[in-house]
Length: 154
Image 1 (cartoon, rainbow, N blue to C red):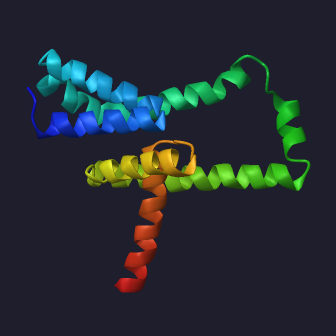
Image 2 (cartoon, rainbow, N blue to C red):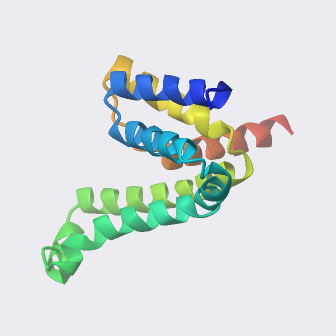
């Protein structure tokens, strides 16, 4: 049961505790549970194939709740773009969504980079009081930078 992957997960768990990164703590806890129940060979491939889609769906649901409850409607939308802050926010939202698309591709094609992204997030949270926003946008930014570097190197 205790092998290199378990040790790695334990280190991530401890770093998650130090950085107070609840998603990492919960994720590692769940992965340990799946391993302890010896369901890893069945569950891990499903989580790896569909987990990102499920996660993005849950995030999208939480963002859309104010619209579903009526807290945000067309009036608020129109009011939000009446000044340049609203246009900046609109453009930023579009930019992040486009950048994150590249992150999905990167994580799907190079899943080993997820560890480096998580480690970078934990270091920023612990040492610089950063906020953990998750590996998807980090992967998107990394993908964008990799594309720029590849353009100039090639």
